[in-house]
Image (cartoon, rainbow, N blue to C red; front, side, top):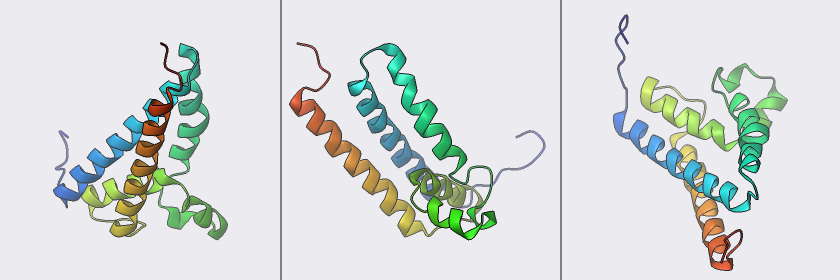
Length: 128
């Protein structure tokens, strides 16, 4: 920030991916909170699901550097698309297409939204 100039290549893409990613994580957090019986249960998903997906999602490297088998496995990681969408907006480069990025993020958001509605409609985890 102080020693270099940061230039956002595609601000609308960056902001839209940032917003959609925030919505997906908010919905995932709601599902996590609905199923948690105790406060300590909330940490299970971030620890055992989210952290590995983040490390395997191309945050610190391009998936092009992975062996072919792990590249194919990474395609099923939704964090990969969120990271690459944001990377495209900031730097102008990405490992995956923009259409696929929006498709995966919107698909994940739709699935989580429907799941939240179903759980709330059933009253799962809610106290009366």
